[in-house]
Image (tube, rainbow, N blue to C red):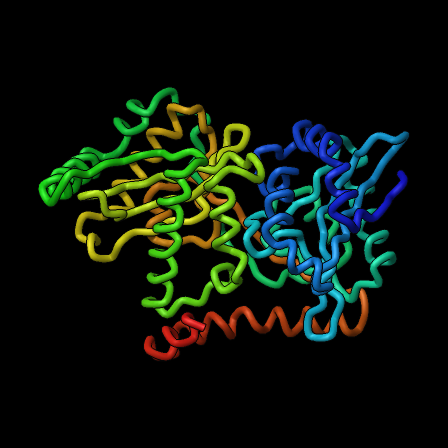
Length: 374
């Protein structure tokens, strides 16, 4: 196996056909966050970070007989004096993973690839966030004594055995179906209610802007800090996806309105039979109508009709997602120290997560709102 580091956008673009082929034939080609188009969109929107030297591409490509068998999409980041290897797209990408040719040799070449990139980049640590437990890279990380920095559950709705939307909803309790019909009637009494699925274009862009603004306002009011929203490139990134001019990542916006006012939205991605619900939001002024559940019911019906077999709510678990899920998957953040500086970095990072969670529970809401607005 021969490895190389792809460290420029030009070389990245030259990988397009090989990346697409490897991804399509991989074991997890439903993970849009591992696709070429996703990385293309991320690199186009976040390009200034790479130009100023803060981020440096470190994509590992493994070839055997000139045939690509592995792609590991990493970026080298300078953080608190340490050189850290992260997944490209963190934190907007929700699942980080390598793309590996299926076969028994997969685990061996993953191990070789990580050792190669560590040596070539002189990194202090690998910090790989949001790795699905089913990922092939997990075994390699555990074998190398990587530190589990944080573990969460991603709620899922497995639709493999669902024959039709009507049959699925008929399987819900009569009380639940009756409640949803009553809520919809009450909403319609307030004004004309409308559900739409918007594919990339001018309408999707306009409603995506409104959805992101509503989400941002809700986060501030709740005193919830979002690492993704705090980045100035995050909203323009979603605007580009909604407009559809950069890359095809299966973007869609599910919109629920009343009197032409946005009351709930879900921004997500379709990929090879899977749907990923990336951002969900509703207007608190309409809370008594449960707009999130009304939207979810219509999103789910649409997804089943389009052949979706896996509806992924993403981590973390919450009450709303629990009401719809029938499965869950473990998602793990890993830290693999490579130097003493990397050991210190990973140790501090592991301590930081429970501390941050504790502060969220104990700090006054007024103070949390100030922090969230920074």
